[in-house]
Image (cartoon, helix red, strand yellow):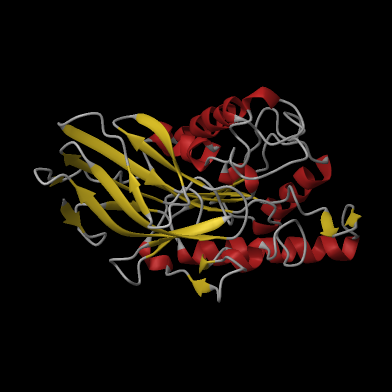
Length: 340
C-alpha cells in the first residue's frame, strides 16, 4: 500500500491539534479534524488512542456519508470502507471531548491510489467556547428530544459534528475551532469538569488526566467571530452544593469572565464576540449575569445574543434537531453582523 505521512501538505487540519510532531498530530478537543481527497479503492488509518473512560468512536465522512470508527483495535489499524475505486473525499473528526485523545500516525492508500489537492479552507473563521452543548454531548439520543438525559452515560451518543457550533460553521461556509468540554464552568473547582474555562481557554492540551497541560499558540488561528457559551454548569459549586451565587461570588464571576474575554479581545483585535447560553434549561439568573457582563465590557465588539428558547428548550442535552435550531438562529445572527 501507499504510505502517506500526516505531515503531507495536502492534508487539511482544523481545530486545536497538537502538531509539535508533524508526523504524529494529537487530536485533543472535540470537533478537531483532518480532511483530504484521494483516489483508489482502499483507505487505512493508523491511530494510537489514549482512553480515559467510556466507549469511544471516531467520526468520519466518506464521500458525504457519515460513519463511525469503533476504537479499540490492538494494532491501531482501521480499515475504512471506500466503496470502490474512483475519487473520494474523507474527513476524520473527534466526536467526543475529554473521554480520550488520539494520535494519527499514518494514512495508507491502495498501491494505485493518490492523495489529491483539496480546495482551500474557507477564509471565514469561528471559534466557539462552551460546555457539553457546544461539544455536542448526547446529541444522538434522538428518542429523548426535549427530555431529560438517562442516568447512564458512556459518550457513545456524543457527536461534535452535530453541535450547533459545527453546524453553524457549515451553514456559514467557515472554519471552526471548538474550545468546549462537557461539564465545564468558569471557575476551577466548580461545574462537573476538573478545571474551569478560566484555565482551559488558552490551552492546547487541557486534559487533566494527562501528564501536563500545554499552552495554545494563538497566532496559529485568528477567528472573525468568537462565541462564548459559559454559565450552564456554574451553579454546581461543589459535589454537594448547587445554588446561585452570593453577591461576593457574583462579583468575582463577572470579574473573571470579563477578564477572559478581554484577554481574547487583545489576542483577536478584529474579532466580534457573541455571548449567550443555550436551549438547555437554566435559571434566568445566569442570563442576567451575562447581560451584566456585556454591560461591564462595554464594547461594540461584544454582542449579547439570545436564542428564542434560551434556557427553556429542553431539560436534557439538546439533540440534533435542537442543535440545528440553535445553529440556524446563530447563523442568521452572524450573517446580520456581517452585513451591518
